[in-house]
Image (cartoon, rainbow, N blue to C red):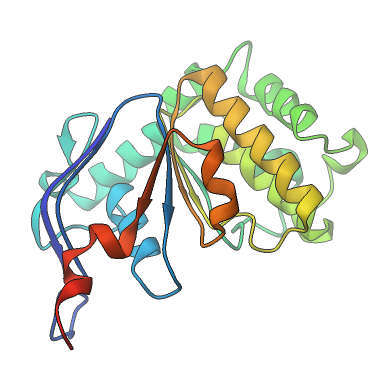
Length: 228
């Protein structure tokens, strides 16, 4: 599903590489817990895995396709077709309704829309029921929801249309213990049911036991071993 070979990434204007990863691979359907302290490059790596960022050297591939070999427009289309993302700050469109926020990936990707059982609208309603969001809230603007409710909408949006890869960037950081546990059960259960590969980033190592694989980014990233 995912493969990294001889990756080097350096932010523009920086004097040193932020990430140096010789090799990393993750098979289809596996779940990976990636952890490390703030500032160690976790979000940068997720951007590279999703094709938002492009490696300066080496290869980052999704489903056998090197992101770096694609134009910006083709990366955007491929991401819409194959990747669901749960952002740390959720990134819902505040003026759109809950239902319209969940449907956004299907509006950008005919492939995602075609993988919805019945119709995209039916799939969105099913996911909102799975995340236990009251039906009375589905027509409300996302800005009117609580933090916990917004987080559940963000999960439904990432999962609609059965993307092959789901990326979650510290999505539980704003949640209390009960909401965190409910969210983890939902996310892992939906990925298992659809066969999706999950890359989950968090500094909360208490969550690691729920995953197939666990990696420390500071241990993986050779750039972190270079003396300042």
